[in-house]
Length: 244
Image 1 (spheres, rainbow, N blue to C red):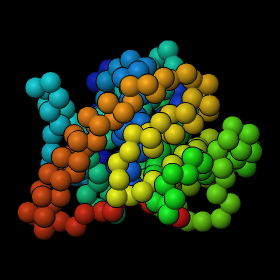
Image 2: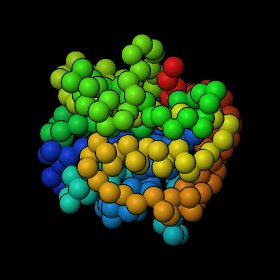
Image 3: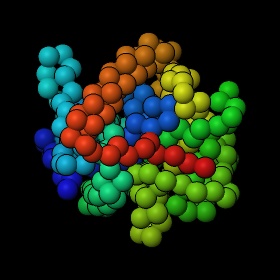
Image 4: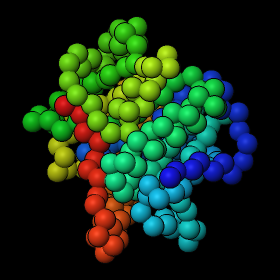
């Protein structure tokens, strides 16, 4: 069971919804955390429920839900910053459906999901993309994002992509090549540069390395505590979102 709690009412119509749960390379959390900081986004809500381990994030001596919603009226963005993964594969379905409904009810214009894709050549500068519509794929190609063509997608972003395709909603999965054994701020830099092109933004990445390192340590600690918590109650841990 998953619920979305809003702390204040905001106008999300026409906004882009951006999500990226912890996975290979921590691409999503590093990217979204940096965007929240640089765009001055406001904390407006959170996700709660048994889909998440019983953990609380502490920032500046303040307890916060590990999965939070941020909003920018100026840039028309709603972002989901997740410091914790989900507890099971079944929870992935629940979260995907809930977020898809949230996007529809908020009358948001499009979805962008961020993930790392394990590769034998993580130094590859190419960023890949999958989209819910052929015309979006063509546009992304013109912006320098490479289409996948054939393959298999898995995880929250992949399920949201499927729901978006069925409901005729614009949805883009941005896939950054990563070494799954390494966390590198360069991965987030590639994702941010792609988002800049798609949304016509100009987010500067000069301070990314410093801030991404802070996010990396925080999330790695939360994921470690999450695993310890689940192990202590005999739960099975779901793997990260993967694309191939």
